[in-house]
Image (tube, rainbow, N blue to C red; front, side, top):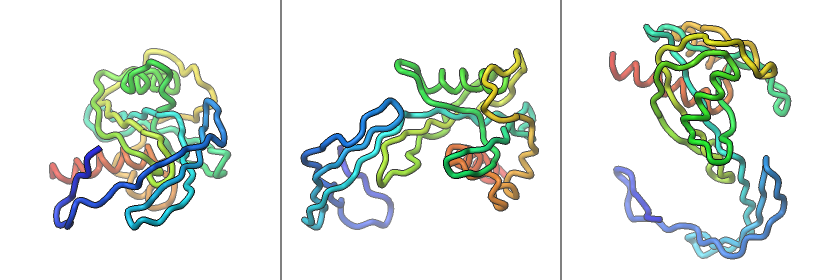
Length: 191
């Protein structure tokens, strides 16, 4: 893998060199390894490596782009309530866009008229491998009732309220934040 450099940075940098990796935990939901690494400074250490399944999420806007489809739900691990966009884990052999479409239908009963990839990001890049693929759907039609009953209650929220919801800590899910902030930044650039 090549080292790419951003504007204003000097030198190519050096990657961490990974030696032996020992498995610590291996399950379908989580893999943990302990790696021998040598940092660019030459310092050696053992470093944990975490793998979580990849996910796909979708920001669904109504046709005029004035409302976003959000679910209100509880996440038991951090014990928080918050708004989230539809999404879920990518199944073996499934393309991220297919996951976004499937999860949207299962969680909300809506089918997207179109889907566009916005960005793929790593939510905890310093310790975990867990790519999240973020998509945008403009316009959706309700074609069924939700089949997943534990994913929250979905409804249309005005996009104008999204910055205040973020500021109030009502949107904390990383995929939701990245997707909504991407859309807000894109709108600001067009203004």
